[in-house]
Length: 219
Image (cartoon, rainbow, N blue to C red; front, side, top):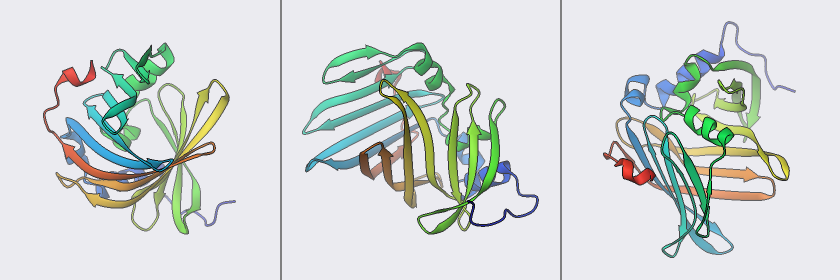
């Protein structure tokens, strides 16, 4: 059940456009060429670093390490990629490659582009605040749920379902503690990710934008 009736004439694109505006504006988002994000979390009493690097349009490198040792890594160069766990590399399969190719460094701004379908479903409570729920269908047909605060316009929650060897798993992310990084762009500095029984609380330590990241990072 949705908590409240939607305002008349409000569309899904209105909600996404407000988020883009309050998080820095379309012009600034389109100037982004790379983003480096350093995060930390705790797991079984151990401090873990999560270093994420993205380069336009869709290059990605995520390194998960502790005590100077990498134990999980994802790399995508825009055409192909691999996932590494404890030093064992596995090439990305075609479905994952297509999914990675479809991602864009501009984040939610891409939801307004051709090929995406967005639908405003209603208003739901997310941590005691009203949020607009939007169903996003990507050009590949993948569906996600995005939740944006009615009060601030900022995104507060995401839900997406991934196919795993053990069946479909829904991953839910909560976004809090938005701060301005640089270029007027705002990011959540506290992210809680829930996937099945696993809960990961991440704290953003630093965000660097347009640092001139080399393509060598994604080999």
